[in-house]
Image 1: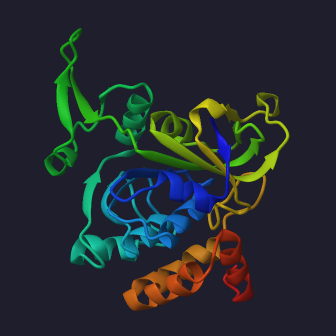
Image 2: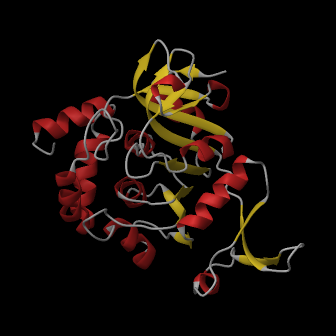
Length: 284
């Protein structure tokens, strides 16, 4: 049964230390509010999964939430490196971070395999690359029909999958529009799912276009306006490019980063108060 609760309650109920957690969204609909709530609650020892870890994973890694990252590209979009990610991997600051690097095709196939209940994903990729030399979870398998050598990777089956969407109805059905990445696959592959949405409405329908994800695969829905900030939510608000630029300066120095996170995240009670504080201090 899907429950409609606050984000604080959803994270407290479903995200526990030591779990494997995927916060997915591609270009837009990135569940930034959920990541900040995990930080706020001090959940640690997480294995984080994300095709494109950007600012929210930089924040979670820098605040010591993660001990491993499974990913296929990492960076501050349009700006440069993720300094907290780099510092954790290279210098174990604030703690050691193990990494498992893939490409996008492998991650997408691994999520799809997890969604189908399969133990592995098999696909035609990685040939001519050095990925297998650096990642022992990339193996090869011979096609039983043609004998062709194919790549195989473990399926991704997160303990908790978290996505952001534009709308949900009062029964917990989710509606997404625009670029969708692997959101559907993450929801289907995960043991438990949390979805933050811009608003809760009376009814969602495929007649509007977009995609409806039914409530029977969703555990918790949380209404969090602007919950994808600083990424965008198609039809609701645009990407806040200046925040990504500001983040590069904020995150370069560990002490400055910790001070910023304490002031804006740990000293606010929820995402709405966080956004208000950003506006008051001209970060938005």
